Length: 228
Image (cartoon, rainbow, N blue to C red; front, side, top):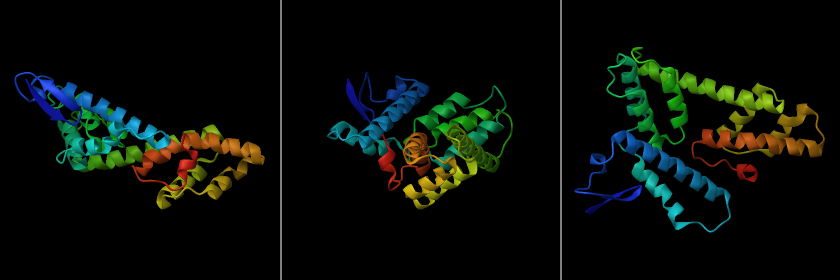
């Protein structure tokens, strides 16, 4: 028996070192996706906590690099989606599930995989879309999804959707969270100081995940005060 070293720790594979010969590719991609999701959650928990860093969690950034294939990039994925669209139902070389599994198994798509997977779910095999149409469609899909997401938050907190969108856009453009702008955003609600503070905390509990996701791994200065 030989030990086969891989980013998900060491695997013992009988009669050789190729795990793909023992585990179906779809299952392996599923395990990789679950691993990346768990690793991302642990990193987020460590970033919010004050406990002594774990050596195991400290290695995760390096392992993300190992998982990020130099071949499977954004252009490659867009091309695969276009080919899926062009293939007739029942004759696809890659199924919808396999395509989503491939995306979920690669570290480069950690921040995009939910959007891409949701976009793929809207497509029909045999629709015959070009790669440009796929790219343009995905851009529109993501924009509309983000607008709907913010509109839902605005409705929940009694804010104007356009005002909240401008507030979020301003933060992401400068990558700086401005407390005074948050105060201005809440001003139309006419709340007392104490009530406004509670309302701000409630709003930010919903906005922090949105801002963190849209920042794509970049740090937003001042946002940590609202991270839990």
